Image 1 (tube, rainbow, N blue to C red):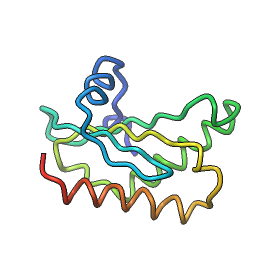
Image 2: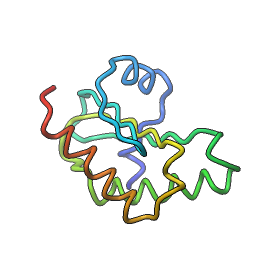
Image 3: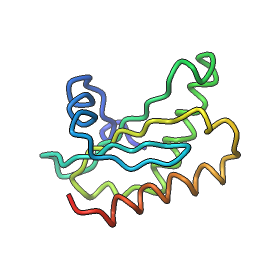
Image 4: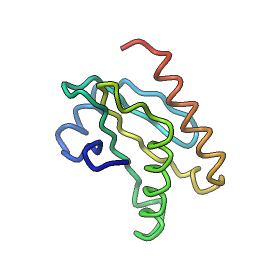
Length: 111
């Protein structure tokens, strides 16, 4: 995922989360909203309860790779991907399928 597609500002992330448009399952929660850009932006959030910094960074790298393969960046939407504790119970392929299912739910939903 290119750096221009990352959502970094705390104000923007808080605004998206407080809009309360989200899709979730046991592993991921994806909050989403429209943006004014011509491309999508994504933020990956991993709680400190998931483990030490090395583990959290590994999870973020894996989720960014999944996002790069699944998400369509030509849409003008912002996403906040929250990783839950059950992420550690599954392997990469199962987590990939769960993220893909969440994203497809969003594409089926109307904004």
